[in-house]
Length: 185
Image (cartoon, rainbow, N blue to C red; front, side, top):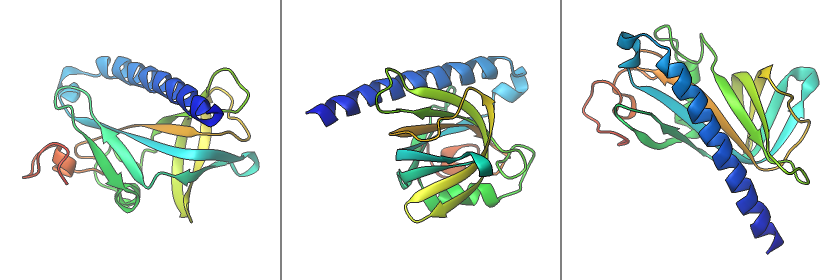
């Protein structure tokens, strides 16, 4: 029962962090020029059971990361779905357009539930160089705002957007042109 209570508490904190991230991204989107705001932007969420940080190497490890990365968009298309880890990582290998992960690594919000802490720790980071290591996913990072914990518990990573014409390209999961509908793979 105690574990279930911790999980629900973590879930509430993660939801709060998600709403915080969505509000920040929406505020940023409101400042974009009208022609740019008409593009669909995909945002991503990864969850893991634990977090391990190697500050000397500026890397963090999402321990037992979920092998499905969630993606979603805001208005006007409201797209949502799942990506297999291999498909997500393939987006990092692409170098198409000016707005892609490989040439312009995304910012992300790292939300970590640290056991014994009343609230989750929220840190804004720039992530790069994802590497799969068994059931874990390792990122290089640079802290933008906040203090990254040395370890944690349940973790969620809210990754900034990638747009049509970036690494995702037109037609990616229903974004842009192409025969696939929203969220259809």
